[in-house]
Image (cartoon, rainbow, N blue to C red; front, side, top):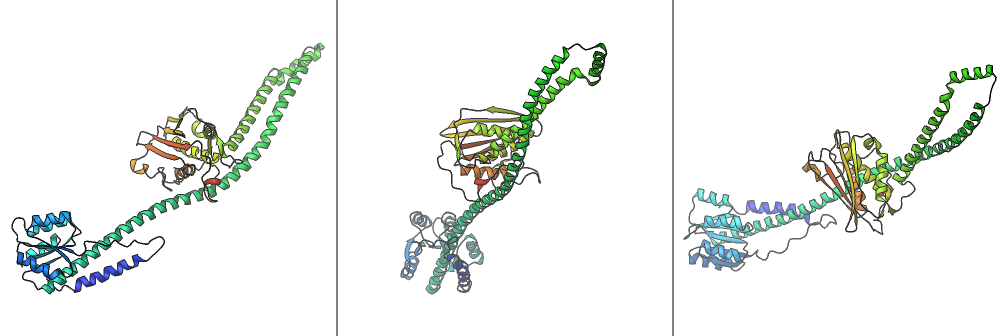
Length: 471
């Protein structure tokens, strides 16, 4: 009703200035051009007067495809079978009026613009129609030039709205892709950080294992010799015990034996030698477990026994599983050897077993089971701990997400575990509920013949740490 050119022309220029940069061809953020709208020139004229329908059709038919309807119901029938860019509707018609038609169109056909044409020029009626969703409101009789300008403006506005909607959908899709890539980059970043840290710890572990192995070997070997020598000394002493001595010497000898506790010396020596042998054996076993666990000399892709891998991990986690606080249950099935990177799987078991132990506050149970299913080795590790909230469960494999108190975890452990399983072509998933414990199900292909390609910075060179297992 007011000046029709100013505001819409300005809006069109503003929208064009916003949308134009989005059409720049870029390898990562290019937006596809919207498809041509075949209905952009189709107009439906709704009026109960034949004269009005004929006049509007004759005037607009030069530039647009026009169809007519004499009532609201007839117009809705047209809309149900064809798509129209614009509907021009009278308000006062037999049966349902134009306002009802406007509501139906806004509800069922939101992409269709509507111009109301009526002899009623009350401001309240005009305001109501525009609030419901009409693009414009013309009063009869209206000049045909004004009619043509209003139609042109309504179609331009519709085109701008559709284009903006398409670009918005395209941007939302790209935002979703960028968010997915961001998560992948964060996981890769976490793996790189972890691999660098583990490389240093792996070198330290190798040095410690080497330094422990040599003296432990000396002790273990010498204890066997000492045990043999002690047996020889016992034989000589038994002969001396049978020799008869003069009374004075025999009395002095008896007094000396009593003073030095002679009768208990040999049993004590045998006990001390046995303790030393046991200690040396334990040192030897720790070194062997370290080598078996971290596979410092076996970084290649090879077949291993998963049960042996899990058991070696448990032995090194004795501070969690050796005190009787946690009842550990093994339910091993008949598993064949599996192709994998052994050190990486040991890191996986460490993460899952430490998390299970830390989830149990006082006393509880950790259960490990294994089975073969559809060519996969399936390992299940469950605990009776505190469980995980449902809103956190879907994010536990994301980098830097932790369910532990502040300062007790960096949120990298499960992210690293997820990357390890992905690299082996397997899957890992979690099931949990607050107060009901947590269960992790790990599936690994048994006969994977070619290892997944790994870059210099990924997990292929990750060494194992016994302390840094973060959920």
